[in-house]
Image (cartoon, rainbow, N blue to C red; front, top):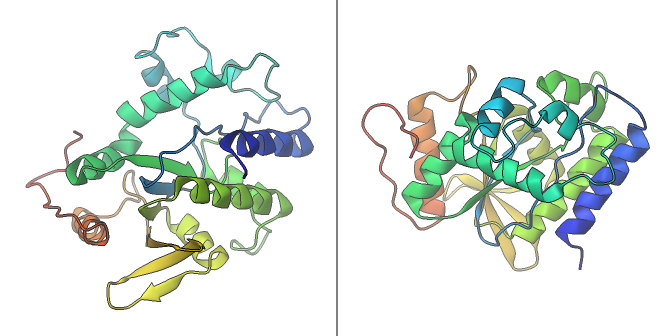
Length: 244
């Protein structure tokens, strides 16, 4: 059976094939082994914000780390993958982008994890799109994009999620096209037969934070649907959503 180390190695090999020497490219996302049964949030690709990383590093033991050097591609032979995992965990715990993840998971009493369809770190999603999608057809993947999506599917199988929540409109379109989803009209969401005996609820959505985020009431309906799929009870808080 394939492991998380196999997936991470294949991502690095993919970068080695497509980006031999390129100062504009960062190393791909490297994942920890996911906890089976978690609520899986799915984005398009990891962003790379200097301001965001500086904020995260202030909470770490490597406050003076230069994120551009640390994540540069090609990665040095002594790349500290454990430190990379630690920094990602800090981002999940404190970065505002993940506030809805934390909020919902805490309210439902479940664990959560975040994956991206594509492991390409970029400040602007449009940069990744030029590499992962065939020009003129935003849903058709290039060889580079297809190889990453294949590894993303392996991540899902390793995670054996309780539910999948895709939180990007374009990523939702890709997921809908690339996975054999079936819409269950009696409950109002898609189901994904990840493997035999594992049929996972899937919720396709837009972003939960930022300028193009869902309005509060659409988010409340989405969270209510997710809670029902997990056999949980969720009640929206009065006023603005608060980070737990």
